[in-house]
Each structure stands twice: as C-alpha cells, then as structure tokens.
Length: 321
Ligand code: GLV
Image (spheres, rainbow, N blue to C red):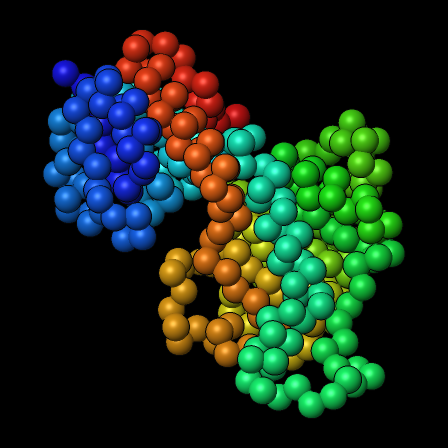
C-alpha cells in the first residue's frame, strides 16, 4: 500500500488523484507548515511526499523514511533538499520547472517597475492623506526605457525576463555560470563578467538558484561596485544576497533601491532593518503565485508521484549536473 504525505492543503481534485494510488496524509493548512516532528512521524511509513520549500529534507528525514521512493518539491528551486544524499538512497527528487517560468518573470518585472516608479511609497502617501497637489518631482523615479539591465542567472526565468525587456528598448547584459550564444542571439543579450554587470547596470535582476557558487554573491564588494542609482531586484533565492551588506548599501546610497521576493529567513523577522526602508519593497515569495501556475505546479507534483509509484520515470526529476 502506498502512503503519500502532502505537507500543505491542496485542492480536492489533486488529492483525489493521489487517493487513487494510495493512502494520503495531508496537513490541512495552507499557510502554516506541517510541524517538523509531525512530518518526521508521518514520513516513517510513507512511499511518497509532496512538499514545499518549508520542508527541509536532510539526513534526519531520510533516516526516518526507509520506504520513501519519491519527493515531489512544489518549486523549481530545491535548495531545501540534500539531493546527493536523497539520490544515493535511490529516492527520486522532482521539481516544477517550466510551468512557472513566465509567471515568475512577470513578478520580477512587476517588482522592477514598482520599485523604479516608487509605487508602494506613492500609494501609502495617498492612503495617508498626504496628497496636496501635483509636484514637479513628486515621487520622481527611474526610467526603464533605454536603461542597461543586467541579469544574473540566465536560466529559463532569466530568459523569460529578458524577452519582456524587448519592448522597453533596454540594453541587456547577463552573467551566468555558462555562456549561451543562442540566447545571446535570440535576445540580443551581451555576456559580461560579473564585475562588468555590477558596474554598468542601471537595474540588476537576480534570478539565480542557491548553490555553493551563488551563496552571498551579492556581498559588500558587489554592492560597492554598483551604480549609486542602481535598482536591485531578487527573485532567485535570499541567501544569494548578504542582507547586511544590502542594508548598508541602501543606507549609504551605494545603490538606490531594491525589490525582493526572496529573503534569507522566510518569513522575514519584523525587526529586520529592510522593513523600515522606503527604498526596499518586499513581497512574500510569490514569484510563481498565479492561480493557473500554482495549479500546474501541483499537477506536475501529482504526475511525478504517480509515475514513480507506478515504476516509471518522473517527468521532471532533479538531476544534478
Ligand atoms: C520558488 O521560489 C521556486 O523555486 O519555485
């Protein structure tokens, strides 16, 4: 008998599909993660689990789960999972690439324009009853048209972001682990060293996953190299940024503003200095959050679990290169 753990509440039609293949134990909350001790208990006799980024899959979980065959992570990123360890036990790990690409790029674009045009500050100003008249420089922001835009991480989301820039007559630079000449041709993007990206970009968009190579990539030295009026957007992973260095850069005017969908600690500590800064816009990790895309992500997890439990290859296994 298969047993499938689902660590957050998902709509009934998806649960029904899982129930057709085994017993389902679902945590019935959508905003609160399943407590770790309950997860460790539930996983003991589970053959599959559908999890979110909140569940850390480490040696403690793997030790507790001798029957586990598949972990379906409802995210494209999988830094919450010790993939080499899990794979060494013959357990399949799957993620949700592609289905969320366009939605996540749209959130990145939304954040970029929101920060550039100071929308959050302006809206608060109206709500607070401070609007008295039209002012020549009232909430004057920054143009995207004709700007140099630097993309750090030219994977699928980076490319989707670059495609959206085309209508704004921007110059696109990118830096990535590897160079992709087809992308350069298709998108008119220029491959540059990381320092050049920092020094010449008016907007920097980080779409990079968290790896040992990208951890703390945006540190004090990086912010120091950026233009003083640069806008930094992060839709990759929080730990790619040294947040203390970011706070310092914003306070000291090394850069102008930032927009973050991802933080080192999620949810953010309400005492975090970024929360008191007008030039930092923070949203709660909602890159892929459109209803259609979230449905597609859950369906892909369900498909992957179904395939593996039927002794077939998963659609989107995570294979570390
Ligand atoms: C979200 O951050 C994801 O990796 O899908």
